[in-house]
Image (cartoon, rainbow, N blue to C red; front, top):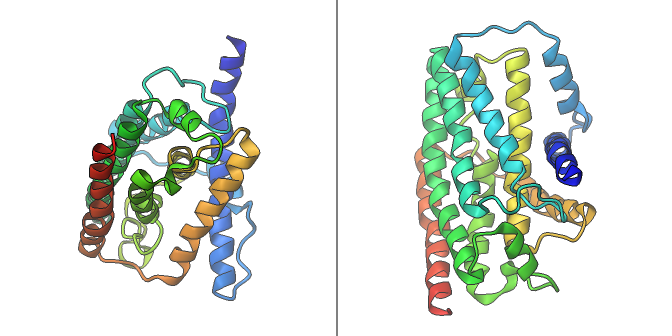
Length: 297
């Protein structure tokens, strides 16, 4: 029992640290590609600590509760993700619960941002919801293909079925859903060419424009957890997870670097271009892969 209690406490902390590391690494890699030095990798952690010491302004109860709902959804989601043999809630719903919890994050930010009554927030939230609708269709099809192929809704069982380098990404029925997930990863992470939600040059960071102090710090923490969850879920479903956290982290780094190379060289889509792309190629690949998986049963 005490082991589970320790895992429940340690898992969100590890996810937070890894997510902040990736956020700092993203800024450093982009700067280097652009021939700049860039900030230190620890800058996101420094920013979070600094923000908690600054004055905060609330716009009402929904403004506060939306941020808390989004952060709580991310923390709960981390507890269902296998991470190198650590999964505190492995027997409590599996992939179905993960799918439900992933809907809470954008809804929480939408509730909070709507209370801010800023036009830039409204534009950013509408873009976020449309983008979510764009990538959730191929994401759901890819997850359905995984559940159908392995005859389980447990993420832990999916990882165990891929032991011995029998990774789903390189097995015939699941290679297409795996490629579809790879294609939507930048959209799920908010990287270019899908950086339409914040778009600092257009809408002044969109949903973030009214956040300051502890509210912005909590949003940054939520984003760090979301980065961890998005990449870790791909590693679990298509790269077989790992037997220990170190090798799991190495796999996450490889996937994140692929996304960063795309982020550094591609311009930003318009929202209609982003949704059109997501509903075309990734959705087609995931759907065909699901059909092949059903036929191979």
